[in-house]
Length: 295
Image 1: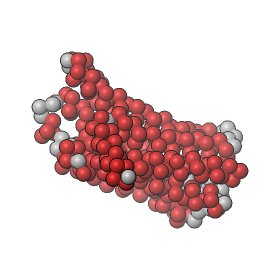
Image 2: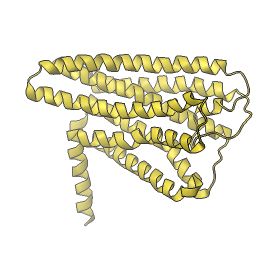
Image 3: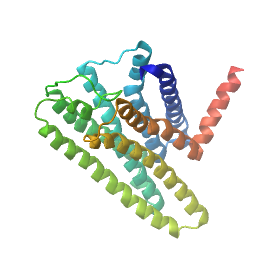
Image 4: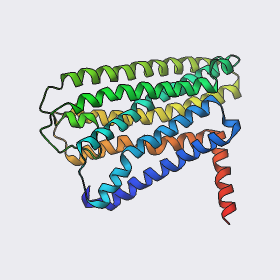
């Protein structure tokens, strides 16, 4: 990336600053506006926090590398970055599942919803997600840390365990087994919840009167768009490891990994911030107050 490092630095800074600003605004208005103290906004707040967590795991380091013309990282730093990035991806998947489950309860069981999903319940669910994720990814990283590496060059601008496994000259069967089991657990649990809730929510929406059906469908469409962008980005990153028999250039590896990682981080906060009416109105009101007070 050295040839166009200033262009890449501007793009990376734009993505990071935009996602950080919008995510912070979502967290701020959810925290300060009492009317937003509801499970749906708590889950969206959790999603915004995860975006800040994931983007901060690699974009600041990338910016430093581009400006300093440095492209190295210590093994411990690489393992830490892998732990943070892969925790972000797993937490994002589970949080999307929690959001669609919350919306299913709100649409399918409106009278029982206040007791089925309270603010405390949503907070406990987010906490449980992070405990499971941090524990599960810890196993992936620890198994990688025990390996012996025979190379130092990874075809990526950030670290994740699959890149390190390509450099290992020892037995990685344990890593592959644990990695497959962990990935299967994430996908099977989250996708089963998401698909089931999609089907049930759509079935309920078809029976609702016009305005209520439109409101419920709008929330579902927002989730579908955001989740699809995230999954496409994740598949982009995973897909390049399935091309081991095809010679990919370093540029191709960088483009695939960067586009896959950065798209959802940049776009999803905007989707929820703009398409969620209550958040959009309050964010606009807060920004208007800031600008009016500065004059």
